[in-house]
Length: 147
Image 1 (cartoon, rainbow, N blue to C red):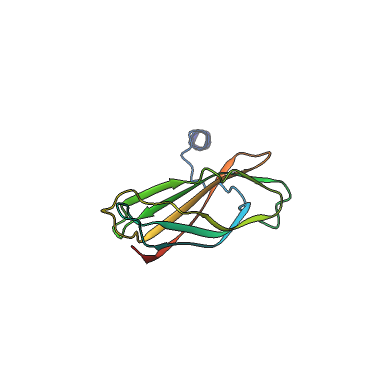
Image 2: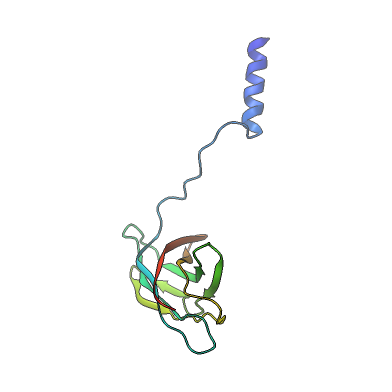
């Protein structure tokens, strides 16, 4: 009786999700982000800083399928972590057949003239293999330049 009760509790615990589980593994990333940086070289009168997002996006060597870039969102934050600017690159939709994108992806301007130069950035790229679900990869760092 006792063994039956223990077995029943164990089965119910597993069925109800009370057993410990490990995080799901989505496997290795399909893209490699390198040399991502954001800099600013000033601003126009009546605006906040102008930012320049540059870096390299390459398909991982293990990937043999085409990878499609769907969206790139740049978030600029101040020293306290408050978001100053969120910008999406409308031209990032690209098919990568084993190659990559290199260079600068955009130069968004903060429209708020009261904002000083941001401290940090996060560049978030949504992508997928042609035959798979969308995934996200991020690069982040400090911002360099002058307001």
